[in-house]
Amino acid sequence: MKKLTNWQQYYQAQMRHPATRRLVEAELKALRVGVQLAKLRERKGFSQTELAARAGMSGPNISRIETSPGQNLTLGTLVKVAGALGYEPHVTFRPRRMAAARR
Image 1 (cartoon, rainbow, N blue to C red):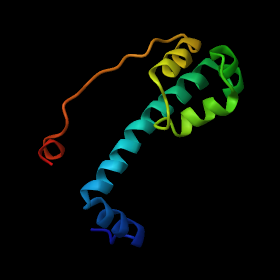
Image 2: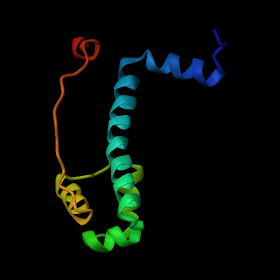
Image 3: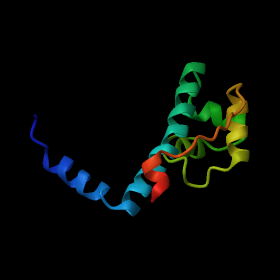
């Protein structure tokens, strides 16, 4: 087995704390939305500025959504951006993992 780096040891130690784990998991979930939007935008061949113009927003807002969507991304904004890309958002709910549900 490969020896863990100092960073990996630190990360594992931090993730043992329930509050830290919840924050990291929430941030990772939020980033998935931004990554999906960036991929759709790139597939359409739009720059962030072009997408912003189509959605009636500013370029920096699109950049912020793609890199940090958990911060003030409203459903209305998501609908505008998705519509500008020719998509409709689809929200699903899944049960939490058993370990997380017991906390």
